[in-house]
Length: 388
Ligand code: PLP
Image (cartoon, rainbow, N blue to C red; front, side, top):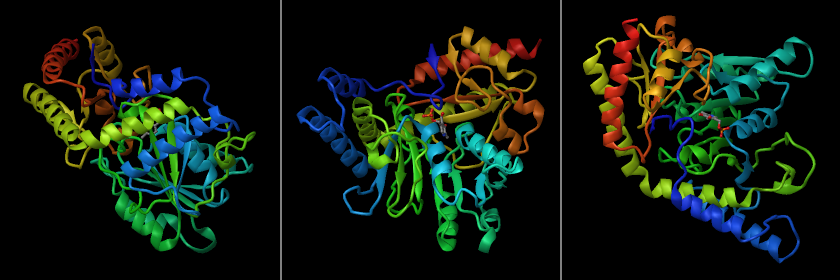
C-alpha cells in the first residue's frame, strides 16, 4: 500500500517505538504514586517536558509561567481549550474551516444558547477562495465592551488543504484587545518551525500521531496566567486541569518524536514539498481539468487537495484503495465515508469540485518511487472513472 494519508495519521518512527517499548517494559508507571516507582515515572514526564520545552521554545520551570497539559490528542485539547478558556457565556470567534473538534464544540455552544441552556454565541470568520481565513474581519468579530468575545480559536494550518493561516496577525489583534487566542497547531507542529514563546497565543493544541509519534497522546500548551476550567473531574493529576493517570510511555514517545521532527525539519520540508509538487505537477500535466485547492496560498509542504472533475470522491477513494493507494476524502481525518468538505464549501468551491475532491499527504517516509507509482495509478483510476 502506498500511504498518502499522512494528514490523518503518520507511521510511528521506529526510534519512538523503542522509547515507548522501553518505558512500557520497565514496569508500572503511575507518576502520582508516592514511592520510588512513581517518582521514576514522574521523572520520565519531567524529562519529556524539558525536551518539549526546548523544541518548542517555551519554559515550564517558571512559577506562574507557561504549562503543558497532556491529553489524549488534538480532539481533547481543542475541546478543553474551547470549553475551558474564557468566560463561557461570552461570544466565541472561530473560522468556518476549523477541524470538526473545534467546529462541533462551537456549534454545540451555539445550539445551547439557542435552547436557552448554558451556551454562547459564535461569530464565524470566513475563508477566501485560496483557503485563507479572513483575519482582517477579526477585530470587528471580537467586538468590544459587554459584547466582547472571550475566546478566539484558529488553526495554524488546515488539515484538508494544508493552507497556512495568518496566525501572527490574529495574535496581534487578540493581544491588542486582551482576548485569549487558542491555536490548533495539530497539522503544523512537527512540520513547520514553531516557537511558542513569541507566538502571542494563550493556548496551543498539538498531537503526537501527526509527527510520527503514537496516537492517543497530545497536549494543550497554556501561556502563563491563563486560567483553565477542567472538562474532566475526579483526580488531582496535572494540577486537576486534566485528571487521570498520565500515559507515561506515550508522553516519552511524543517528546522523542518531536525531537526527531526538529532535527529533520528542513530536510523533511524539502523532501515532502518536492514529492507533493511532483505529484501535483505531473497529474495536472496529464489532466488539464484537475484542480489544486489552495495552490496560490502558502501551504504545508506535504499536503495536496485535488479535485477530479467528472468523478465522485467516494468512488475515487475506493478505486484508489483497491489499486493500493491510501488517501482521504471529505472533512474527517479518516478515510471512511464522510460528508462533503465543509472547508472547500466555505472557500466557495463549486459543489461539483467539492464532490470530487481528495486529499493526499506525503511524509518524510514517502519515497520518489512511491509517488511515481501513485501518479500512474491515480491517472489510471481517473481515466477509468471519469469515462463512466
Ligand atoms: N485538529 C486538526 C487540525 C486535525 O487535523 C486533527 C486531526 O485529526 C485534529 C485536530 C484531531 O487530532 P486527534 O486525531 O489527535 O484527536
